[in-house]
Image 1 (cartoon, rainbow, N blue to C red):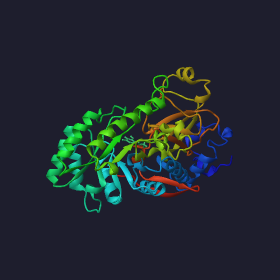
Image 2 (tube, rainbow, N blue to C red):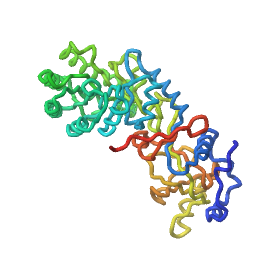
Image 3 (cartoon, rainbow, N blue to C red):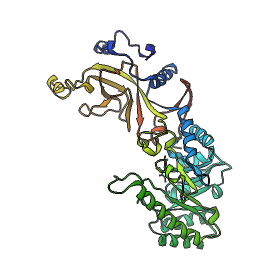
Image 4 (cartoon, rainbow, N blue to C red):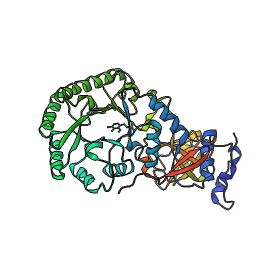
Length: 422
Ligand SMILES: Cc1ncc(COP(=O)(O)O)c(C=O)c1O
């Protein structure tokens, strides 16, 4: 495997060089894919913790995601899983959708500003004060909330609060009702409770407009097969959805053809390809495939997001503070503890992805400043080499490392700033 050693130069006077006594077996820590990413970062002069997106993989994942959406449904991209304006822009173009699901009021305002033609559905019920804050601080934009935004409402009490907000603002709000299809994270739990809320909506039609239902089914496929199979939990979720839908259609027959029947998420989007009650299908994470999305239904998708950081110190063996015999007892002769690395940063919700065989060290402890990793002699890292992590989720990760570095054809071609807390 060829490797650009210029990326791993070590100052000759550094004490770490002296401790790093195994350069001879240092054939190259990464396979050709990660070597390519490492070279791209090095070429761009990036040597601090950073998030990178592989644009070619993102593009291929977009094609795969589009192929999972039934012809009678629209894809709604989950903004919180892709919370970077330029990334969203690219993802919306690639998947040909302007529908987004949003979860955070500051991001809602920024999305409305940046994508004034988008169609937005909230993914969780917002405190009415947050909704009021949105209207007060939206600013100048052609985005028209009365047409382009559905608030998510889970209880009659919240519906009443939103009615009062609409009256106070002298505007009309669109309301989507959260239904519980088995996840038990809130929402209306049975069709008769939905009927009560829909009657409330009938009585408030001057200010509130019923827009549809949202039933998220993240529990499907998560239970051990012995407790409940994926087929059974999916079937139950779909049946529950249909029974809520029947009530909504009966209460609002005139609106029925235009209502938004939202549900799904990356883990279940493939299941909704056929015979689904949904006409509005959410997914976001599948485009980047962080670690938690390594599931059979997304097997074809490729990991496209990594946290990267340089190695600051590379040592033989693993030495805890205190008596040498303790370290020997705990780590001596253990191939996976043969090398120690202190990296720039750490403590992330992520797992090392390259080189293979890296492990955290619980005994040494957690550090957000200089974390320790252990590894075998094979694929040994040197000072200034890059470690690649796969985050468990893209949500959160993309917000915390400054500009997201976009890698294409072996080069960092773009830097995308995530949404801010404004
Ligand atoms: C309501 C709702 N829909 C859909 C999703 C799916 O998002 P993703 O595709 O990024 O997993 C989520 C994720 O938390 C959600 O809360």
